[in-house]
Length: 458
View 1 (cartoon, rainbow, N blue to C red):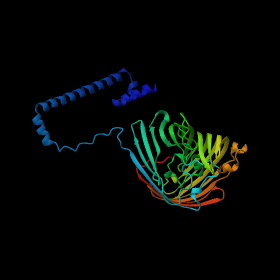
View 2 (cartoon, rainbow, N blue to C red):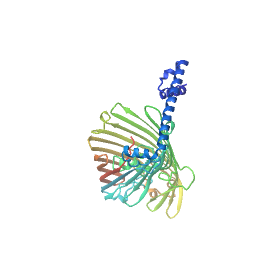
View 3 (spheres, rainbow, N blue to C red):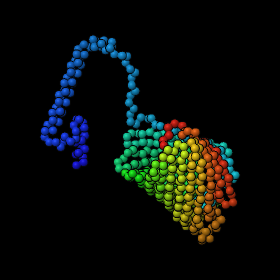
View 4 (cartoon, rainbow, N blue to C red):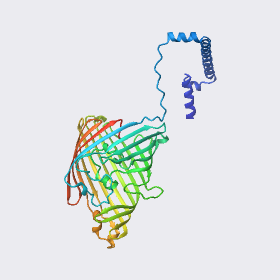
């Protein structure tokens, strides 16, 4: 019934007839038919007149050309040909960054005590002046159905890597969209944001300990946005699992999978919030790390849960002068499998651990262009169950990296943003991630944005 009514309404609008006429009976229908007939007769008369003029012009081409030459203005420049829907015209964005670091402890000795090292972006980086990570992003709509993005990461050590490279659908029905390629996972809150969008120089300790910096997916993602007034999103990811906490297992199939849900809403005109819950399961096979004179390796499964929340406030929804943001995330990971130790010989035993960590940060813009922020990080390594130690095949000293500890860090930052394209930041941190070593850290950072850059997520 709704579809028939919609078609009737469209026809009525097209012919200038009110919709109510369709319910008026045979007399009104006859009037409509008569109007259509008159329109047809009128168009036929006009077409005949145009054909007659064309015949006259063809009969006297020279006279017609002369008349046109006298009466017409000079011909305009040829208009550019319309671009095809997949013409190579991507938006280009370049992020430039640099840092000066003053560290009281030797960064080459940095470790997060109690956690198996994950490599990647862990630690404060090198002392002194450093060229930070630069990003080059190309993005374009491919056609009405797809868009694509490629982001290169360029480091101060003259290495280039693919940060992201994916295609995504646009406007699938029922709020569903798909993504495929390499991309930053949507688990948690901070993980899906590029480093230049962070409020502090470095990632929270939880991200460094549990993800080795940020978790990237080589695979596919499906998101569903519910058709409700309150923001509600569900997502599923499946990938190779070749990055920490997994590794390249040289196997077919899926090596890691993730589920996440996010919900959010406004609080009046001046505040809004979002919270989420994520689950990541990944597999590892001989994920190696060095501990003293021994090379150890974990094989098994990692199950990580993340709860995140963020609250934003700005007077009447206008963040130009003042605003405040409070965010935090909680991580919990269980690892179960085996742990091997290679020194003079190689032995293997069972391994199980339950570890957690969290951070809480607040950032306040107290006047235009100026912000101040405070962040506190804390981890709990737990006491792992190491079968080789329980059976006295190895001693606890052979796994010194895994000795129980509670790493923590406090950070204070002040930044100045002259425009939406530039930012300067000063950050102080007191890092206590390993026993007997307090690292007092001072950072100066600049971030510059060149070209077109898309808006960041909430």
